[in-house]
Image (cartoon, rainbow, N blue to C red; front, top):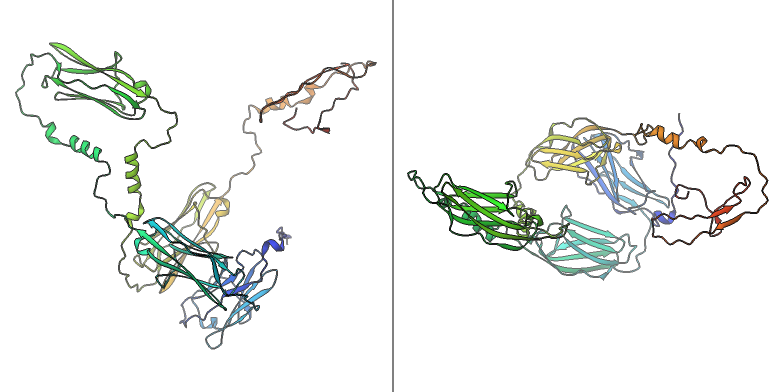
Length: 578
């Protein structure tokens, strides 16, 4: 049997924890259940961030074997044991034991015929709780996040209990309400607040010597659920004008031969000092309006305008226009509209001046459109109204199971299954990786929508391999389905050349034999070394190259040795110093 390669890390006691394990919330007797039901036991343990902490479970003095029916959890102070499909053999006394580098604490849960006993160290509380910093009143808008914070003394009281109330009623901890209490820091975060969240929030701290209370008022101003007014009045008028079908109705007339040469009734107006990126519009009136032989052309500085995405000409029943989209400085110049038929020609001109802007535009180019996008993306407008909870009479069942996935590193992994009942408001879906709760992050996306349950893992790593379990729980029971993910890793170190053509050239350049000196006959040197050209001082900027040079005689002395020093210390050879 091979020797284990795992080496226990050397912890510094002061960095780990300075307190012994304490169960701040003891185990409680679960209600009597019939065979086949599930049992959940939980308690709270401090200190939470101790890496040397170890939690063990015992049944009637014997260690509990973790398996498909017995599942243990220990995460940031939360200790729990789940017993799946309990039987009469599972009755008895359950013990949770916590051990760290200082001491151990034991929590014992006996069956209904016995009592609950707790073994812990006596802690002396020196004073009653008091808030060194009180809560402050807050006024905000619907949909924003609210943070309530205060400071509490004393700090090391294990019997301290902190409760939050809204208008005198306890706050239910959930996704939107997140309380925090660590050291002397007490806080409550409210996510995406609603007008119904307004009220007086109270934080109550209690220990063996007394209690302390601090309160604040929260006011949430509601937004309109539906916005009926236009967010772009000028654009609405233009749209109504363009959609007016009466402007485009043609009267039935008999084709007549036109004996009038073209003539512009109105001229386009010149436009000056327009910023880059804006749109411009030239328009004029032309007669005759019913000449099928009439031809209209646009010119810029005497050259025909190239019709495309940015240049859009219009000629409809005497209405002549040119729209230029997303102006640039090169669009400046004199624009000419020329009308030609069989009897003659006519033309009008106007000037366009476009002001060049910075190369990088950081500000929005359509403020009204940006506001409209922000309104459309405001999720608070689409929240569902509270509906009457329906009574669920069915335990969760997975109609389809998770499938195994085998992918390469960097690809996306997708697990999905189907779950009933689909309209159970109390249904809770949890994901586990190798029997541990799945960590939340940007790479993990969970979906639970009307019976469709899915998990997407983006840019998979070899560490993501393992068994993924989906557990659905409601008041009547639970269901579990699992799937295996296999992620094949890529090479970490490439030993082959990535540029085969350059490898022979590098080998030739690194061949030191090419630079060896030929043996010459030793000559007797009768002169001491002398620098004929001293080095010069240099002053360069950071990251620039520095070059020092000098001249030395005698030239042909094979015993001459040259050394470089910096501040009196020899310089070591490296890739930066040559």
